[in-house]
Length: 243
Image (cartoon, rainbow, N blue to C red; front, side, top):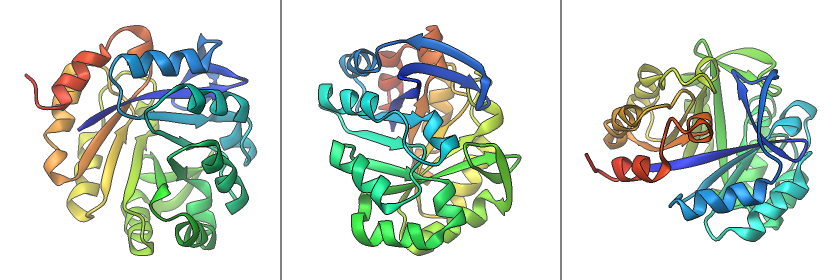
């Protein structure tokens, strides 16, 4: 199982939010590329980058910072936030991003997701952002009527192979991952699932690793790394099967 550091971008800075609320925003660095290099040096196999303004505005807003990150690291980068059109997706992939994450557009515009899969194939993944078991969109400012499992089954049928599941109420709160929700998705789909939201301790990594045989292949962590609650090298070792 992978441990994937999160780099959330806002106004060119590395920040972390609590439950996706911009008013509860902590700045951790003015230099996103330097942070990306640090996580690479600590052993990260992949980086998770989110354009926070992009998610709200509906178009990428931190492309300069994203470009700098991709240029300095050798490990692959996945990115989400504000990707609503095929042109936006192509622009980000042209920068060197390996995987794009569609959230709002995947739910509200299935034709966009189909078109992206046809054009970009396995470079396209989906963000399943959950609030009380239902899918949130528009930068987490709205909650749809669709359950996370219904959404997962829909995108799987369309050809998606990997998703990121984020429990919004746990995101940035260091309260532990939502293991029950992850298990439900894993047991009812054959998707590759990357878990996000709530990771704090090495025990959280151990608990998520137990779900790896069901399809949970990665864990995204952000605030715990920035606060020092979680050591990335140790987390990677545990995720790989260490004790």
